[in-house]
Amino acid sequence: MNDKIIPSVDQLKIIINQEEIEAKIAELGKTISNDYAGKELIMVGVLRGSAYFLVDLTRKMHIPFAIDFISISSYREQSETAGVVRITKDLDLNISGKHVLIVEDIVDTGLSLGYLLRNLKTRNPADLKICTLVNVEARRIVEVPVEYKGFDLPNIFVVGYGLDYKEKYRNLQFIAEFNRP
Ligand code: IMP
Ligand code: MG
Image (tube, rainbow, N blue to C red; front, side):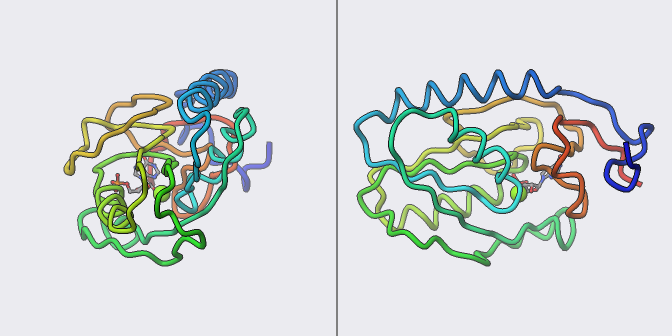
């Protein structure tokens, strides 16, 4: 493969392969469809990391629903600990009275989602829950209720399947531990 597209192998260790991700997403799609059957559901993807997960997850769902996106600035863009979160692209849909499922790539410290939950709650959704592909409990600073999760991981930095290092490697078909230079 082209080393301009994927990092060098010594920087990458595959943690979750493509088959495991596909199987987990199929399972989540089924569970979520069953849980939200008959409800007015809006699936909210948090840009940009959740894009791959949201698309694949929704393709495994068998109920009608709407999709929307929200973008928040990550504290990681400045530094690991700045703790500043703000909405850079808001929802287009009105979520009042709707069942909202936030779809994330990873819940790490919980700072971003803690902020997002507080913000979206003020818009009076019927219900507000979280679905994340990766959950890192060991890093949690803010307690956030995670209703649906793909994989629990220890405190390691991962890329792939939407997760980036400096905006790159989101398109990897697997999730890999990445040794940051
Ligand atoms: P939080 O710490 O839960 O607020 O997560 C903030 C954001 O940091 C996530 O949505 C990801 O975009 C990013 N992030 C956290 N951990 C990782 C990682 O291991 N790899 C890539 N991005 C990460
Ligand atoms: Mg993100």
